[in-house]
Image (cartoon, rainbow, N blue to C red; front, top):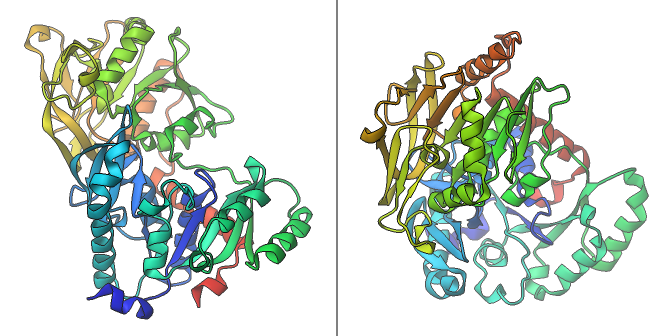
Length: 509
């Protein structure tokens, strides 16, 4: 299929652009995907280029941004890396890992990215679009832009905003966040910086995160429409967002949904944190309160703590040592504390980390081999290639149950012979996926490579019940609603709220 020749025959794509980063593009796309699914259409999400360390692995072992995976769930389809053909994973110091169609193909500095990767990037975007349309000729793409579409110093090298919009002749929506203030300037300024042929693609404007009486903005709506000659197709009220933020910095402001918590969880806010969507199932537990830990402190107030994934494990382990948090974690463990490490967090709980190929942040330091926190008798060596795959296994601890999730990691972890006297057990039938040991005083230290572990309802409930038993709390009821059903409910509620305030009819014809 020659996509360029067939553009006029495909269902008109809808593209969501924003006046800035954080305007609400991701949630808007998620909502539109579910609205169109409910209308009987075949929506498919697409974001040409995303920058995020919050990743997901498709069934072919390809990495993609979690936000596009979530949007695929909203469409009722299986996520695929071609929905996010370029993923940039920041490593710090203006360096990012470059992933094309799910596979890591190198690293780049911000300065050299467009010089080295612009042409192959545009090729892989077009390849993905062609593949999607060949397999789904009746689909409607719901496309997410990135940041602002009119960053004038970068626009000539734009890969994922107006270049895609013009290539597909998409019906574009401009989303702006009224909570930030200056909404009129955001809209007018963005449109004024567009070329006439680009501005013609903007078919509607959405005012996002409006607080208060919507009728009070009626005069503002009329002014925008008169000034721009573009209809305001939606004024979306402030919603209680229940999804992981695209940018990990937003975690500082993210609040737990729990009103009457019985369990308090502390998650270490690593400088290079990755895959923080792992904790969405805990965020949605009514009995759990989550707090993010960024500096040295007494951790005894937490019923369990989590060391999350890391994009730069060596770098983050050095941060833990220098900040005093490593010692805090050791002291917490010696006082009946319960600890879970996920992926990089598992590696840091071990005795040593060795980085001979400079894959995990040791390039910025003098030593390529450093000590871990030392609570599990494990040593990790980072090799050149990473492992990415979906996993189906069975757990042994804290219960026997079917388990699924995915791995994204560099490094091979094995038992440390020097510390072999420390009793350690495997968590899963697949013995390389995770380990645990009990403290002398009754707490547990566990680590796993499995992302999405808390989405496994039986496993999550049984682990939480271990904590509850030690606090002399009753076990969770067996009728606890599975997280994936909760996620479906959240997506459906999000779509319903958008549908009340959003008129898409003019964009569908």
